[in-house]
Image (cartoon, rainbow, N blue to C red; front, side, top):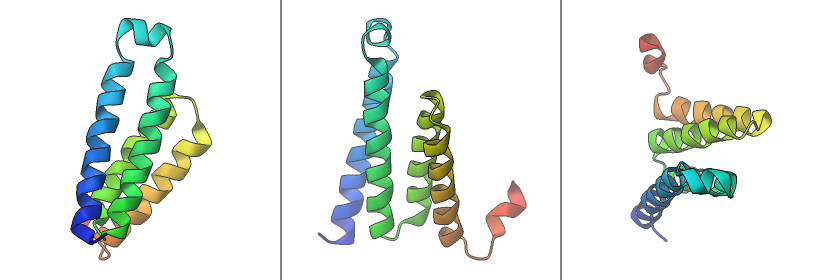
Length: 105
C-alpha cells in the first residue's frame, strides 16, 4: 500500500472513531456499554496514527495520538493516556524539528 492509500485508510479510521465516540454519548449507550465504544475508538485512533506515521504525515499522527490520549483519560487509563501523549509529542517533534511550534504554546 502506498502512502496515499495509507493516509486514506487513516482518515477513514479517524471518521469511524469519531462516529463511535458520538454514539457512546447517547443515553442508552452510556448505560449499556458506552465504554466499549470509547475503547474501540481509542484503538482506531491509534491505528490511524500509526498509518499516518507510515505515510510520514507527522502532524496528523500527532493529532490522532492526542485524540486517543484524551479518550484514555475519559476511561481513567492514565498509563495509556500518557503513552499516547508521548507518542503525539514525538510525532509533533518530527513534524517541526526546529521546535518553532513550541514558541506558540
